[in-house]
Image 1 (tube, rainbow, N blue to C red):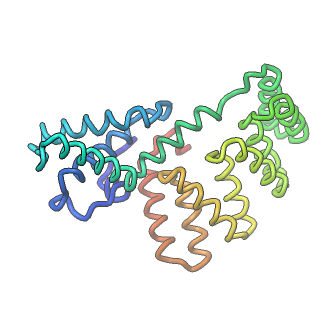
Image 2 (cartoon, one colour):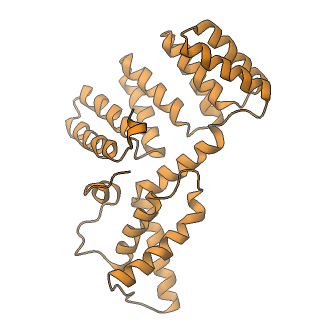
Image 3 (cartoon, rainbow, N blue to C red):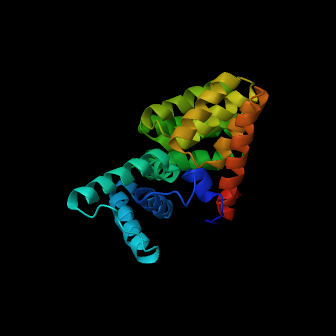
Length: 254
């Protein structure tokens, strides 16, 4: 991902570098460390490592020293850094949600369910929507916890502009995986294109809570805010969308 000067401004808001405390500087570096963690890694297992690594880097490169080097002082500093990162570092929540996706966005262990899922994908690409629906439904019947199959079934209904059925299907997916980015994003978009701004805003807000660095969510939220003449909010989320789009690699952008 590309880095730019707005990363810390939007991800970790601190009034000024000059006025940062010992804990704020380490928390800032910890947030940067977390942003580099692979999405398939459980961030909870790497959180402490990032804090210790950031502490070492700050003391080595910035000649930073803890004003209270006692055991109790170090414990308090560690606790405060943890609180600052948890509160202010959007990358932390994003990484948590992205890791959970690896647990739910996967093929079924039921071979026949996966077979029908793959057939459904072929039918969807070929725009044979009725056949795709039949295949996805069979996949979910064979495996009632097959999140990807529900999401693809919802996408097929959306292609047919059967929005009520699409939303109903996506909500089945969300019952299995409440943080499901695909289902949340698509429900929000459906409500947006059908001019149900209230429900669209609700789902975009939920998305932002789970994926605060998702550029499409900020962009969608900005459009809803603009429709409601909430211009300051629209501008804020438009700028955030631009910032996060700049950090997205070419494959994801496409």
